[in-house]
Structure formats: C-alpha cells, structure tokens
Length: 47
Image 1 (cartoon, rainbow, N blue to C red):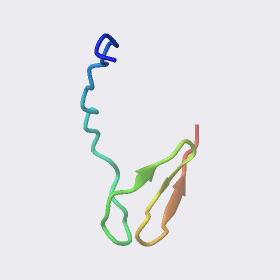
Image 2: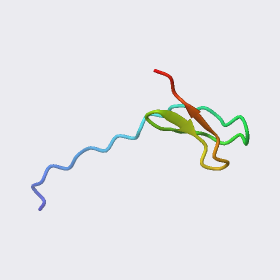
Image 3: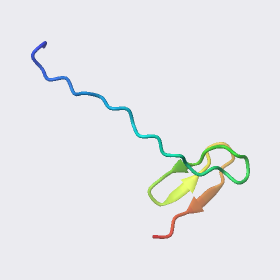
C-alpha cells in the first residue's frame, strides 16, 4: 500500500459569495440559482 501515489490536496480557492438580503448570511451558489439555507430566500440565475 505504501507504493500508491498520494494525491497532493490543494485547499479550495476562496470566493466571496453573495450575502442574503433578508437575513445577511452567505448564499449557496447552485447551478441555476443562489439560495439561502437559513431563511429560504432564492434568486434564479439568468444565463
């Protein structure tokens, strides 16, 4: 098992996210929307 190559783990780059206008917490960035897990506020993306 010692001869397996170990992948070097890189820390993810920090991206400042959008803040929720209702409650002020950071919103989750999904493929087609931004959503707040705390209060449920959702904004849909327009591509």
